[in-house]
Image 1: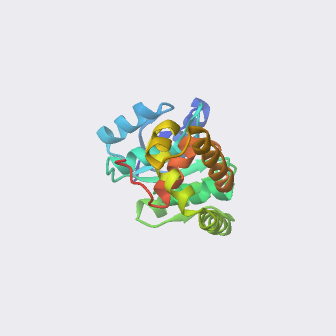
Image 2: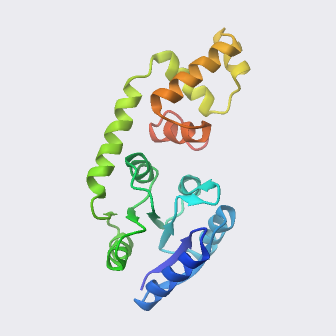
Length: 210
């Protein structure tokens, strides 16, 4: 029997997962759609495995992965998502997920993932191994295109510095810093600053304490 915690913003999905898991001898110790509540309850309830959706009513499951890492939580995470985008699969694995299963997968695949991850192994759903490799390779290739100055500014942005503060430190105008920021976001194919921060953490340019 594996103790599980469910993080998904759809009650009907959580109900279905609970029925499947408990009907196959596992124990669901808690569930939530709220990131803050979920992380707090995981620390208190001490599940062995977390099932985590990536899209949580305007927030991201990547926030959960980052916070669990920061708190040194021992629970292992299986991402259960609709997304088969290489970037999402690769990022989830690089941020500490032990498994990744698509929501359209058969129930026996999810049960196999729970068993594998609970035993300390990794599990990727059908067809996701090649997708993960593609995502990891593409990330590395994108990072190689950054100039030293772009990499320097990326680190400063990821650490929360404003364009004015960066400009003052590097003797650049804020407008020039904004241009650098836009260019490096385009090169890395990132949509916003939180995504940039996650990328910088993955590439070990900054750590979670920054």
